[in-house]
Length: 371
Image 1 (tube, helix red, strand yellow):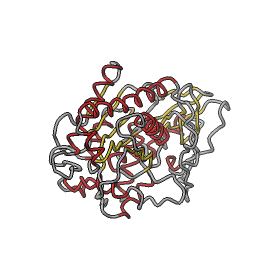
Image 2 (tube, helix red, strand yellow):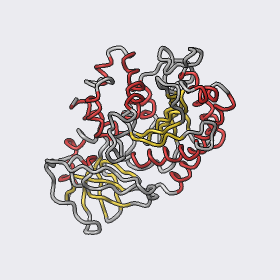
Image 3 (cartoon, rainbow, N blue to C red):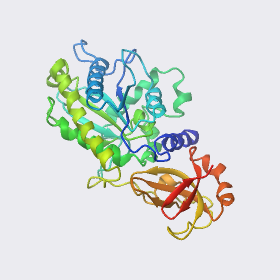
Image 4 (cartoon, rainbow, N blue to C red):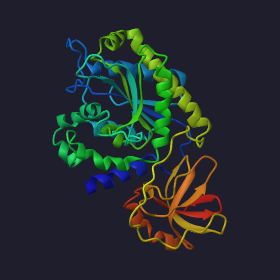
């Protein structure tokens, strides 16, 4: 489990939160859920499979984005009926340094009455007094259980057992620097899907989906209707209606891209807050970080993001960061020293936690990389 958590942090910060040179939404990865030997949910009459609906909607969404935004690279985790592991889907997004990951799914229930769409981001429920493991756990368990189809899945996912609620406890650590942007896209998807062919809005929630856990960028999983509900199934079986669903998600993408490109550091919608957890024992620090504007110094930059984070946030693993504001991004540095040699001696240890960390010189609000 310890190895899994270390890998988790390495993925999170090694890809999405790099030096801050990507200020536009240039790459989106669309993930059609399931595929190949993994059919996903199946209709009661056995004539329709989730994997077919998700692929069709994902392709339509990709075409709409490509047509409207030729400068955006659109990648599908699968373009045909093939099986892709959950880790493989995330790897595709991470390798592409994507700015957004959208996973398309269709819901199901043992009862025929539940219907509607929902949007999910990674994490524990933000609703007070709501039990994470009771709320949406059937959906989470079903979507995560596809790892059991993988050969030797235990070597890839460590001790994680999709049928054991205790396996989800460590995923609470995944309240990461992309949470606010993930929630923002999820809310926009909810907003536009309300005008689509599936009317019931089941809301936005935070849930421990493995495919979202392993991605290192804003990521949202959409459940676009219930294959087990006759009304939703009728919509999903209609090609024009599936295109309307894709159009709703495209409109959400378009609005999100406008926000991302135009005001990368715009404040998050009301009610969105970064998680905060105090660390019991902080790692050994170098001398206290000099205040901004107090003269030149050297440090190790660990990542840059579009919002100002709480210095006590768990992403800093007990370090107290020097926060350097920029025009679009806040840069976070640790291991601050008056000399390059002083900062450099901490670089090796810091890279064990933040693999893409690098040495920088800080002059006021200017951060310059030091090779």
